[in-house]
Image (tube, rainbow, N blue to C red; front, side, top):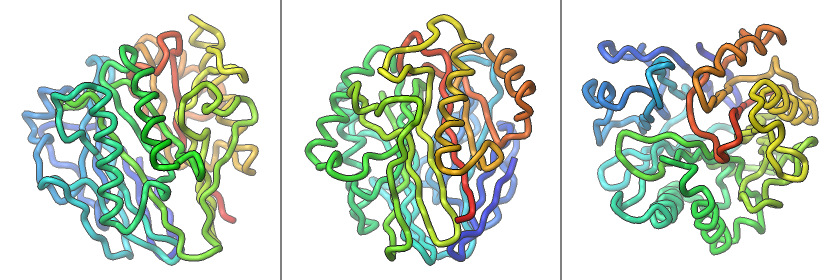
Length: 341
C-alpha cells in the first residue's frame, strides 16, 4: 500500500508491505524519514534489522505469534532538506520543513538504561524525546502525537501512566496541547520495557495550527488519568491532518463497554472513530493510514467481516496482534485522515 500527498511544497509518502526477511525493501522514493515494522524477533535479528547507526531511524517490534504476517512501514519525503537527530550513535529522528512548519519525526526512542525499572525507563524515554527535540530547536510542547510500545503492558500500565503524568506535570504539558497517543502492548527487539515514536510540529506562521479535537462519544482520557488527547488536528492553508489516538470500546464515563463481546467492541470503536471524523467534516474515505490492534488472532475473521459489511476493505489499513491497555479491551484502532482546507 502507498499513500502520497503534497502539502506545503513537500511530497510525503507512507508505504506498507509484507516483510520478506530474505529480500531488501523496495527502493525509497525520496528521503526516508522512518522505518518500522512487526515480525518474528529471531528472524528480524537474523536479517540484520536490529542494526545500529543506520541513517534511517528504525523501530522493529515483535509479533505475539506467527498468526499474523511480518510487515514493514516507511515514511518518506521529497522536496525538503533533512537533518538527522542522533543520540549515542543511533539515529533517532529526522528534521525537515515545508512552507507551513518545521517537523521532527522521532522513531524507536529507547531508554538510556535497559536494566532500569520500567518506571525509570519510561521517564528516560520522555527525557530522550525532549533532548532530541532540543537539537531540532523545539520543546516537548511541540509534540503533536506519540506512539508508546510497552512490553507486558497489562502488568504495569498504571505505573506507566503515573510516570507519564509526572513528566507532563514537570514540563507543564497540561497547560498547552496534550499530544494524541497510542499506548499498546508489544515487545521490541532491543529488549526495552518501552520504546516510543513522536511527531513534533513547529508552525512558521499563524495560518498553521495544532489543536486538540475532542471525541463526541467519549469523555476526555484525562478524566480517568490517562494523559493523551483523543485526537489532534494540524491545520495548514491547503490541508487539515487529523491524528486520531488509539481508540477502544470505552463508555462516555470511562468504563469498558461490551466486556467479552469482540463484535460489539469493534462496532463501538468504529462508531467512536467515525464520530471524530464527522466532527471535523471528514469520513472514512479521507483515511490515509490506520492500524487495528487485535488482542487475539481469532478476532481477525470478525474484523474482516465488519470491513466487508461496511465496504471498507480498501481502506489503507494494517492489522496487528497486540495487547490493549486493559485486559477486557479486545481491539483498538488508530487512524490518520487528511482533507483539503
